[in-house]
Amino acid sequence: MTARPPLPPGTYGKIKTWQEGGTWLARVKFRDFDGIVRLVKRSGKTRAAAERALRAALVDRQTPVAQAEITAETKVAKVAELWLAEIERAVDAGTKSPGTLDAYRSIYRRHVKPALGSLRVREVDTPAVDRFLMAIKLKTVSGARTAKIVISGMMRLAARYGAVTANPVREVARIEATAHHKPRSLSADERQQWLDTLEVSPAAQAWDLPDLSLMMLATGCRIGECLAIGWDEVDLDQAAVEVCWRLVRRTGVGLLRLASTKTGSSGERLIPLPSWAVTMLKRRRLAIASDIQPVFPDSLGGWRDPSNVRRVWRRVRDDAGIEGLVSHTLRKTVASFLDDAAVPTRKISDQLGHSKVSMTQDHYLGRKLTDRQTADVLEKLMGSSPARAVKDPKSVHRS
View 1 (cartoon, one colour):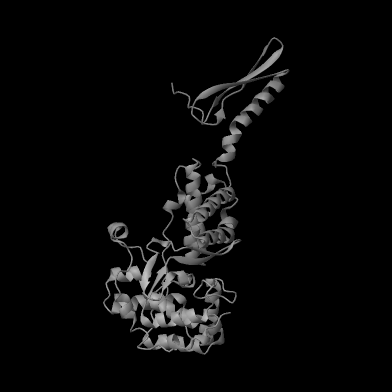
View 2 (cartoon, rainbow, N blue to C red):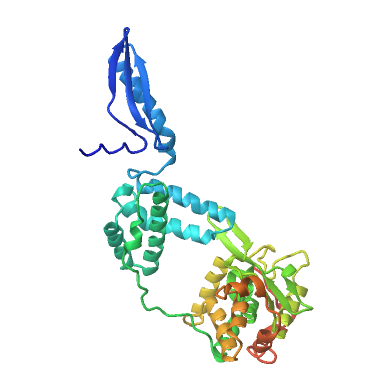
């Protein structure tokens, strides 16, 4: 004879009632969440009253866990709320970027919630997720990839609570990347064309794009890293700059200057500078008030928002009829220029702040630049005497 299966944790069996000395009693076996079956008993003046008292006790017994846990009956919208709260805590702890949180929230709000938000956790299976992601892919491949990350994260949270036995996102079809235009590097003529364009553009001058472009060409830094450089990180005597911060806007909070952790500890690095970059920085140091910390300040002496700078960058570029030149193009230009000059890949990686080196190199050999080879090579990038770097200090503009 087959044994009766055990009660699932948090459930109970058949309620039994009987009368003793004029009082009705109700009793049931309840399997607690530690797996132990215990008797729960209540009394009342009538059978119905005893049953009501017992059921109320069972609700109280289940409620603390039910409120804290995600179950198979929980709606996806609730799981998303809990998962996004976890991501927000990670942002507060500095282990996730505010931009990542904003991207996840945006994709969830625009795509995931309308399609899956009202489903129960048990209803989110591989076919449902696969159909949903393929539909998004028809509109945006990058959006489908981010949506996959969001759904996978939510279902992984549900799995941690025991609401599902496996993450259904693991088995969905791969979202293959479509052919796209990779960032290109600029030729010498194109570099000069861009710098000449900036020199005659009032908007570019007002937003420091000429000097900012030179700094990016001298370092290979991301635009958010360049804009986060303060004078405390610049050593004009040693011709070097320490890159250890980035500027990020967080929704509902504002512009933040955060540790440069985009690529782990390798994001922080000391970069030697070519002489033409030092000349430009000396000019700016003379023109900018000593109590202003940013090297590229806004009109109030504060940090410039990278998003606003990119917007002006695009406007200046489009007005000049230059196609496809974004801030990251200058980073690619530096990498290509160094590579063409036979600079070792390790040194290029250090210059750019990439983390793909061995654990031994990361933790024992260090990732700081210890010689000036990259700076010596970049000396030739702008020629012997770049016009912008040697201009009069009064030419520095701020907006």
